[in-house]
Every structure is written in C-alpha cells, then in structure tokens.
Image (tube, rainbow, N blue to C red; front, side):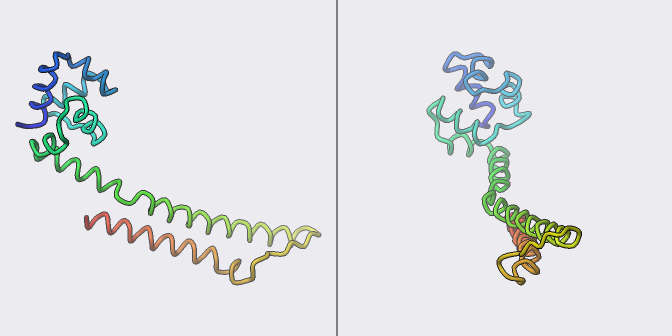
Length: 150
C-alpha cells in the first residue's frame, strides 16, 4: 500500500475529514488531498507527526512507498552538514571583517593625524583574512562535494 492510500485509510478509520487532519498537522486541506492522491509528499516533520497521530511507525509509512522513501532520503541529504556549512560561512565573514578593519585603519592613519596600531602582529593582519577566506572556501567546497557523493 502506498503512502497516500495508507494515510486515507488511517484518517477514515479515525473518522476525520481532510480538514480535521490538516488542522492537526498544521497544514492546508489541499496538502492532505495531494498526499492522499499521490500528487505530492509531505516533509519528514509531517511524516513524524502522522506517525504519532496514527500510532504507526515511520518505517511502516516509508517502506510502503518507494517514491516517498527516496524523497525523504534526498531531503535529509540537504540537511546533512548545516553546522559545518555555517562554520565555513562564519570563517569567511570573519576574514572579510579582518580585511575591512585593516583597510579602515590604514585609511585613517593615512588621511588623519591619528596613528592607530594593529595589535596581534603583522602576519595576522597581512595574511589572516586571506587564510580565513581561502580556508573557508576550500572547506565549503569539500562539504558541497561530500553532499554530491552522498
């Protein structure tokens, strides 16, 4: 039995309309209708809620429909490395911030009577932003390639 048929049967066994099920899942009635007719599939979050509502295991819901199983696998791959991607994004932005600070200080020292000193050594200010941005770009590329492999 495919997911849509199983959902319709379980909903009818509970005596619920599509509208009532939609309210319990916080979705539209049209979404429930599309799931039942096989025109669309729910997200993994909705599948978990359906599992809880009807007392079914997620395995029972997924194994009944090969297309749904593939959709859930693809969706989960997109979320595979969000923390790692966030880390590389932060490192890249940190490199940009270092570069902007250095350029700002150089401009201030050149065009004003102020003489600000960049603490932390010349290596940090000359190469730190470059290292952070290149490292973040390489890391991000590796994560992207890893996603394509999976």
